[in-house]
Structure formats: structure tokens, C-alpha cells
Amino acid sequence: MYIIVVGGGKIGFALSQSLLLNGHEVLCIEQDAQRNSINSKSLGSASFIGDGCEVSVLDKIGASRADALIATTGDDQDNLITCQIAKHKFGVPKTIAQINNPQNRDIFRILGVDATVNITEVIMSQIVQEMPEHPLVPVLSLQGTGQELCHVDITTNSSVIGKQLNQIELPGLSRIALIIDKNREVKIPSDTMILRSGDEIIAVTRPEDEENLRILLTGDN
Image 1 (tube, rainbow, N blue to C red):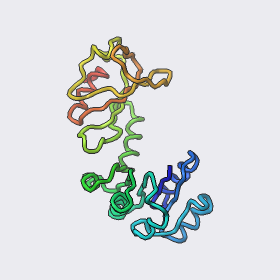
Image 2 (spheres, one colour):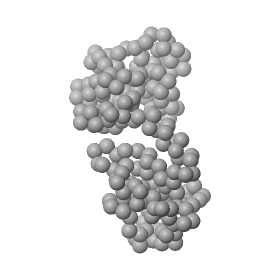
Image 3 (cartoon, one colour):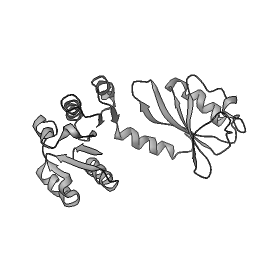
Image 4 (cartoon, rainbow, N blue to C red):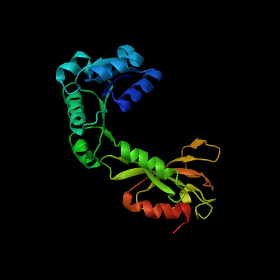
């Protein structure tokens, strides 16, 4: 895949390195000459100096053939503009933007950005996940659906232990997407699969059903 990363700061630089190591064609755009010079020592020809908000720059680097564009600057407005130009001017199929203010998420969605990532929320989710007093952790909001992915551990108090999935009535529109057993094996759920203590569940649910889902899977009121 050809992936354009706009913003060569710590996040954009690290992301570009990771994508390159995974065999993708990557171009990291950074408008600050000094920072771009530093990046180029590691990224080589995958580092490009320029303003990702400018049509001429995106045209020069072949945005029309890009499979995805990821905007990682520290300015939400710049990230939005870059994604819109990529999507509507060059037809980039997938645009992803870092958002620094969570209140801007709806604006990005309405204006056609395919996905957004809020670094603060990601970090907080990871911190909370390590805290045993929080057995259910929202992981990712599914844009435009009113639902989200969440992670929950099945504890010894749960009433679902030993039951098949088709015997369990999940709250609202909730559904189980993945099961990770004690051996760290990832399983795709089936109706006859039996839940056991210690299983980790990745579920899709609505925010208003989170509490009932937590109680059902953990047995803790």
C-alpha cells in the first residue's frame, strides 16, 4: 500500500517507521525543514518537505495513487483540510486524522473523514485497562453507529460461565466480536462456544448498555 503520513512529529515519524518496517510504501510530509532533516536520517527518501494542506504538494507526491492518507499534525484544522483535499481532490479511499480536541470528532465525521484517533483517549484507555477496578474498558468509538468496542474480563462471579453463547441474552444491541482465552488464543464467536472464567471479551455495544453488559459478564453490581 502507498500511505501518505502528513506531519513528521513524534507520532507521524514513529508511524512512518512502523509502516515502512511492515513493507508499505510510505511518504512522510513535514513542513519544518529542521525536523524534516532529522527525519530523513532514518526515513531516507520516505521523508518529504512540504505543506500537506497544499494541493500542489499532494499532487507532486502522487496523492491520486495513494491508498490512504494519515494526518498527524498537532493542528486539528490542518488535519481536517488535508484529509478533505486528499478525499475530494485526489480520491484517496481512506483518510485518517489525529484529533487533539475530542469535541471536533463529529465535525470530522460530518465532513467525510473516514476515521479519527484521539491520542489522549487512547492513552487513557490503556491506563484504565491496567486498573483491575475497571473491568470494562471502552476501546474505540465506531463512528456514525452510536456503538463502540469495549474490552471486559469474565470473572469468577459471572453467571455466563459454562453457558453457550446462544444461551446468553446480551443487553440491547450488544454482541460479542472476539474471545481471547487463557492461552491468549483469539477465537471467533460461534453459537455453541462456551464462556469460561478468565476469558477476555471484545464486544460491540452502545454506551447506554455498557453497565448492564459489565454486570452480566463480571457478576459485579
